[in-house]
Amino acid sequence: MGLVVFAPAGYFVGDLLFGTDSKSDATHAAPSPSSTGLPAYEATQAELNRKKFEGDLAVMAEPWLPYLSRCVKNGEPGTPKLPGNEQVRITCQLDNMAVYFVQFKTAEDRSQEFLTRKQQNVDAQQLAPGASTPTRKAGASGKNDGNYVEFAFKPANAGAQTYVGIWWDRDGAPLLAARIEAAWVAGLDQKWEPLRDIWQRRG
Image 1: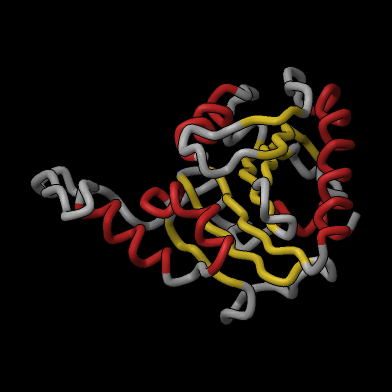
Image 2: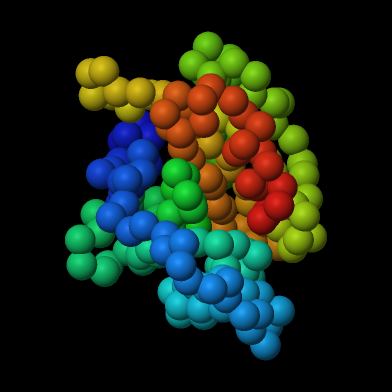
Protein backbone atom coordinates (compact mmCIF):
# COMPACT_ATOMS: atom_id res chain seq x y z
CA MET A 1 0.00 0.00 0.00
CA GLY A 2 3.04 2.25 -0.13
CA LEU A 3 1.95 3.45 -3.55
CA VAL A 4 -1.38 4.58 -2.17
CA VAL A 5 0.33 6.86 0.31
CA PHE A 6 2.75 8.09 -2.35
CA ALA A 7 0.10 9.12 -4.83
CA PRO A 8 -1.65 12.07 -3.13
CA ALA A 9 1.62 13.39 -1.74
CA GLY A 10 2.69 13.40 -5.38
CA TYR A 11 4.81 16.33 -6.43
CA PHE A 12 2.34 19.00 -5.32
CA VAL A 13 1.65 18.24 -1.68
CA GLY A 14 1.95 21.92 -0.85
CA ASP A 15 -0.20 23.16 -3.69
CA LEU A 16 -2.61 20.36 -4.49
CA LEU A 17 -5.12 22.30 -2.52
CA PHE A 18 -3.88 24.58 -4.58
CA GLY A 19 -2.67 27.98 -3.74
CA THR A 20 -0.34 29.61 -6.20
CA ASP A 21 1.33 32.94 -6.24
CA SER A 22 0.11 33.84 -9.70
CA LYS A 23 -2.88 36.13 -10.22
CA SER A 24 -4.70 36.88 -13.45
CA ASP A 25 -4.34 40.37 -14.85
CA ALA A 26 -7.73 41.68 -15.83
CA THR A 27 -6.09 44.40 -17.93
CA HIS A 28 -4.60 41.89 -20.41
CA ALA A 29 -6.35 41.49 -23.72
CA ALA A 30 -7.80 38.09 -24.64
CA PRO A 31 -5.20 35.91 -26.35
CA SER A 32 -5.30 35.45 -30.10
CA PRO A 33 -5.89 31.94 -31.47
CA SER A 34 -2.75 30.13 -32.57
CA SER A 35 -2.18 28.20 -35.78
CA THR A 36 -3.37 25.08 -33.92
CA GLY A 37 -6.78 26.61 -33.35
CA LEU A 38 -6.07 26.94 -29.63
CA PRO A 39 -5.77 30.23 -27.75
CA ALA A 40 -2.16 31.32 -27.30
CA TYR A 41 -1.90 30.20 -23.67
CA GLU A 42 -3.24 26.69 -24.29
CA ALA A 43 -1.12 26.30 -27.44
CA THR A 44 2.00 27.24 -25.48
CA GLN A 45 1.12 24.88 -22.63
CA ALA A 46 0.61 22.03 -25.08
CA GLU A 47 4.00 22.65 -26.66
CA LEU A 48 5.77 22.85 -23.30
CA ASN A 49 4.06 19.75 -21.96
CA ARG A 50 4.59 17.73 -25.13
CA LYS A 51 8.36 17.78 -24.52
CA LYS A 52 7.85 15.61 -21.43
CA PHE A 53 6.09 12.77 -23.26
CA GLU A 54 7.08 10.24 -25.89
CA GLY A 55 5.74 7.10 -27.53
CA ASP A 56 2.35 5.72 -26.51
CA LEU A 57 2.38 7.87 -23.37
CA ALA A 58 2.37 10.94 -25.61
CA VAL A 59 -0.66 9.61 -27.51
CA MET A 60 -2.54 9.02 -24.28
CA ALA A 61 -1.73 12.47 -22.90
CA GLU A 62 -2.28 14.48 -26.09
CA PRO A 63 -5.91 15.59 -25.42
CA TRP A 64 -4.83 16.90 -22.01
CA LEU A 65 -1.69 18.78 -22.95
CA PRO A 66 -3.18 22.26 -23.58
CA TYR A 67 -4.84 22.31 -20.16
CA LEU A 68 -2.10 20.97 -17.87
CA SER A 69 0.49 23.00 -16.05
CA ARG A 70 3.66 22.36 -14.05
CA CYS A 71 4.29 18.92 -15.55
CA VAL A 72 7.30 17.13 -14.06
CA LYS A 73 8.84 13.82 -15.03
CA ASN A 74 10.45 11.37 -12.64
CA GLY A 75 14.18 11.98 -12.39
CA GLU A 76 13.87 15.76 -12.55
CA PRO A 77 15.19 17.69 -9.53
CA GLY A 78 12.89 17.47 -6.54
CA THR A 79 10.82 14.54 -7.77
CA PRO A 80 10.47 11.56 -5.41
CA LYS A 81 11.69 8.08 -6.14
CA LEU A 82 9.27 6.01 -8.19
CA PRO A 83 7.48 2.98 -6.76
CA GLY A 84 9.11 -0.26 -7.79
CA ASN A 85 6.42 -1.11 -10.34
CA GLU A 86 6.73 2.10 -12.39
CA GLN A 87 9.12 2.94 -15.23
CA VAL A 88 7.95 6.48 -16.00
CA ARG A 89 5.65 8.88 -14.18
CA ILE A 90 4.71 12.36 -15.36
CA THR A 91 2.70 14.42 -12.89
CA CYS A 92 0.83 17.57 -13.84
CA GLN A 93 -1.54 20.04 -12.27
CA LEU A 94 -4.99 20.83 -13.61
CA ASP A 95 -6.67 23.48 -11.49
CA ASN A 96 -7.11 21.83 -8.06
CA MET A 97 -6.46 18.31 -9.36
CA ALA A 98 -3.34 16.26 -9.99
CA VAL A 99 -3.06 14.23 -13.20
CA TYR A 100 -0.67 11.27 -13.39
CA PHE A 101 0.48 9.53 -16.56
CA VAL A 102 2.32 6.29 -15.79
CA GLN A 103 4.24 3.68 -17.73
CA PHE A 104 4.56 0.49 -15.70
CA LYS A 105 7.50 -1.89 -15.93
CA THR A 106 5.38 -4.86 -16.95
CA ALA A 107 1.80 -5.58 -17.95
CA GLU A 108 1.44 -7.55 -14.72
CA ASP A 109 2.48 -4.47 -12.74
CA ARG A 110 -0.28 -2.49 -14.40
CA SER A 111 -2.79 -5.26 -13.81
CA GLN A 112 -1.97 -5.36 -10.12
CA GLU A 113 -2.35 -1.60 -9.82
CA PHE A 114 -5.67 -1.83 -11.66
CA LEU A 115 -6.86 -4.37 -9.09
CA THR A 116 -5.79 -2.00 -6.30
CA ARG A 117 -7.90 0.77 -7.82
CA LYS A 118 -10.86 -1.61 -8.15
CA GLN A 119 -10.57 -2.37 -4.44
CA GLN A 120 -10.48 1.37 -3.77
CA ASN A 121 -13.71 1.61 -5.73
CA VAL A 122 -15.24 -0.63 -3.05
CA ASP A 123 -13.64 1.57 -0.37
CA ALA A 124 -15.22 4.62 -2.00
CA GLN A 125 -18.67 3.47 -0.97
CA GLN A 126 -17.72 4.51 2.57
CA LEU A 127 -15.12 7.21 1.96
CA ALA A 128 -16.80 9.06 -0.92
CA PRO A 129 -20.30 7.75 -1.62
CA GLY A 130 -21.56 7.88 -5.17
CA ALA A 131 -18.66 6.28 -7.02
CA SER A 132 -19.79 4.42 -10.11
CA THR A 133 -19.09 0.75 -10.81
CA PRO A 134 -15.84 0.05 -12.73
CA THR A 135 -16.59 -0.19 -16.43
CA ARG A 136 -15.26 0.07 -19.97
CA LYS A 137 -15.50 3.58 -21.32
CA ALA A 138 -14.33 5.79 -24.18
CA GLY A 139 -13.30 9.35 -23.54
CA ALA A 140 -14.45 12.27 -25.63
CA SER A 141 -11.26 12.20 -27.70
CA GLY A 142 -11.87 8.63 -28.82
CA LYS A 143 -8.19 7.87 -28.22
CA ASN A 144 -8.29 6.44 -24.72
CA ASP A 145 -10.80 3.56 -24.82
CA GLY A 146 -10.21 1.19 -21.94
CA ASN A 147 -10.95 0.49 -18.28
CA TYR A 148 -12.46 3.25 -16.16
CA VAL A 149 -12.49 3.12 -12.35
CA GLU A 150 -13.59 5.71 -9.81
CA PHE A 151 -11.76 5.21 -6.51
CA ALA A 152 -11.14 6.74 -3.10
CA PHE A 153 -8.47 6.32 -0.46
CA LYS A 154 -7.19 7.90 2.72
CA PRO A 155 -3.43 8.15 3.32
CA ALA A 156 -2.05 6.43 6.39
CA ASN A 157 -0.90 9.58 8.21
CA ALA A 158 -3.17 10.57 11.08
CA GLY A 159 -5.84 13.08 10.20
CA ALA A 160 -5.29 12.75 6.47
CA GLN A 161 -8.19 13.76 4.29
CA THR A 162 -9.83 11.52 1.73
CA TYR A 163 -8.72 11.68 -1.88
CA VAL A 164 -10.74 10.48 -4.84
CA GLY A 165 -9.76 9.80 -8.39
CA ILE A 166 -10.46 8.30 -11.78
CA TRP A 167 -8.21 5.63 -13.27
CA TRP A 168 -8.28 4.86 -16.97
CA ASP A 169 -6.06 2.79 -19.20
CA ARG A 170 -5.76 2.47 -22.94
CA ASP A 171 -6.46 -0.49 -25.18
CA GLY A 172 -3.39 -1.58 -27.10
CA ALA A 173 -0.98 -0.05 -24.59
CA PRO A 174 -0.69 -2.66 -21.80
CA LEU A 175 1.98 -0.78 -19.84
CA LEU A 176 0.14 2.56 -19.59
CA ALA A 177 -2.44 4.08 -17.29
CA ALA A 178 -3.44 7.53 -16.13
CA ARG A 179 -5.48 8.96 -13.32
CA ILE A 180 -6.85 12.21 -11.93
CA GLU A 181 -6.92 12.81 -8.17
CA ALA A 182 -8.30 15.54 -5.95
CA ALA A 183 -9.21 16.10 -2.32
CA TRP A 184 -12.79 14.93 -1.74
CA VAL A 185 -13.81 17.83 0.48
CA ALA A 186 -11.44 20.71 -0.20
CA GLY A 187 -11.08 20.00 -3.91
CA LEU A 188 -14.50 18.71 -4.97
CA ASP A 189 -16.94 19.67 -2.21
CA GLN A 190 -17.83 15.98 -1.90
CA LYS A 191 -19.13 15.73 -5.47
CA TRP A 192 -18.07 13.25 -8.16
CA GLU A 193 -19.56 15.28 -11.01
CA PRO A 194 -16.69 17.80 -11.41
CA LEU A 195 -14.12 15.02 -11.69
CA ARG A 196 -16.24 13.11 -14.19
CA ASP A 197 -16.79 16.26 -16.23
CA ILE A 198 -13.05 16.94 -16.49
CA TRP A 199 -12.36 13.36 -17.58
CA GLN A 200 -15.16 13.32 -20.12
CA ARG A 201 -14.04 16.57 -21.73
CA ARG A 202 -10.32 15.75 -21.77
CA GLY A 203 -10.07 11.95 -21.72
